[in-house]
Image (cartoon, rainbow over the protein chains, first blue to last red):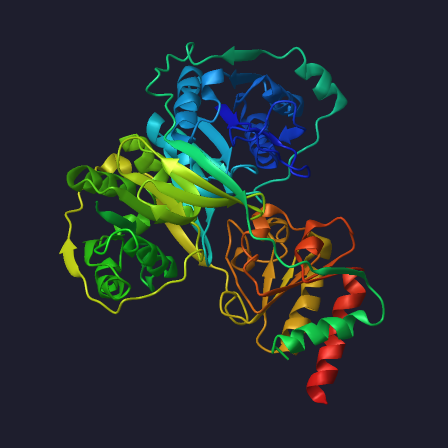
Amino acid sequence: MLIAVLAKWVPSPEGTPVLGPDHLLVREGAEGALDPSDEIGVEAALQIVERDGGEVVAVSMGPDDALPGLQRALAMGAHRGVLVTDPSLRGADTLVTARALAAALRRIGPELVIAGVESTDGYTGTLPVTLAELLGLESVTAVRRMDVESGALRIERQTDTGYDVVRCPLPAIVALTAGATEPRYPSLKGIMAAKSKPLERLTAADLGLSADELASGQRVLEVRDAPEKPGGKIVQADETTPARIADLLADAGTI
Amino acid sequence: MAVWVYAPVGPAGVDPTAAELLTLARRLDPEPVAVALGPGARAAADELGEQGATRVLVGDDPMFAESPGRPAAHVLANLIEQRTPSLVLFPGTYDGRDVAGRVQARLGLTLMSNATDVPALDRARTEIFGGTKIVDVELTGPLPHLVLVRPRAIEAEPTGGSAEIEEITVDVPDELRRVTVVEHHEEAASGPRLEEASVVVSGGRGLGGPDAFSLLEDLAAALGGAAVGASRAAVDAGWVPYSHQIGQTGKTVKPNVYLAIGISGALQHVVGMKGSRRIVAINKDPEAPMLRMADLGVVGDLFELVPALTEEIRRRRDS
């Protein structure tokens, strides 16, 4: 099976994100990582291909600084990478992002596309279904388990009160929750092999995207600080701590 | 300048987010329209009227539950094309995202996620970086604008009114119904509902495994009526069911006191609990962001502190 995995380079989840004067996240030169939720997608794709055969293509959109994300996916075992990169895509809203990725995915023609439920930086959580609609694919989100069974997917989909078992024919896009599987660490051999794997760069012109299709429908007007929460106290635990917490609970009228 | 609300309904009735969305919608349009698709929609329509909808478009068809997302998006997109609202509000839940994302693609509209407010028909507000920054966004392009509103960001104010109910024709091609739900499974949560508890005792990765959650349950029991929550890390690891999850992809809680135990304070989690009146954090890592958010942040070993706190509370209750 040919599987495409969406692989987003995000500012390091441990670091402090910075906004530029245009109110957009500074992605250039910022410390980053392959989105942890996309590592899960890469892992899930590799498991299918290792069992049934096929190929895994990692697809990303971002500036050249996003390349390490694709390299990470390749080091884990993905076979090739595609970076959609164009200055006109900076500040793209979810529709423009979906159009660009959909155009790249049309060229790849995967039977299955795997994404995370939401990215760790923007967490809009809608890109997979928007892509599915643009590409005319089935979609299932909030996937906590997925098995390929006779040409279709048997999926456990997270619900408010438990989970549903969902049958989804292929081709399809799925959005995996973080619990779906445990991503592997790239081996040294994998890291070395990644350097010679094919990595394609596609611009907006390569993808035939018109200026209209690239027009974002959202513009940040203002970013301001939220009102500060009155400062709390940080203390080292000692024998008085339980009584202190109990006092706070009593003050709140909860004991 | 009609404002619509995509109101999630089920056999159990109207989802609480509907009342929040209708409250927000009424600030922009005195006569908001609710769209309710799914089994139970007809029965829920009166309740949507009480919550502030002046008109409810009802599609009471089991198909919407059997085949999640795609049929609802198809019907809603057709309604939007026929009746041209200016703004459609959706709940920021998995199901709300699924429908909104497909409608966005079908009609080429802009879609704003995680909104905490919609100050005008072409404006949405959100919070980023763990709620430390407020961002105002202008929405442009073809109408309607689509906005996913974060659950519990808006205080629901029902009007007690009544709505005109209109049954819509549901005509969905078979090829849009190929994804099917074949089984439902409930994972029952014990104890009081998280959203209603005055104290929430919540655990994260620092608990190290499912067993330590019994310490949290003991503490909740000692407090009487406290609910046990969890971060996504603990749920993803399979230590507790998803119904306990607090955060962006779980529940939003605003208890009187929130006890964050072994929770580092990832943004995902913070957005689900930062409205708590008082926050107590226990973490062995002095750098954990949750400690700085807390009214009382304790650097220490939860495996010692939690049983000691349970003991202290029992002692006070008994005396």
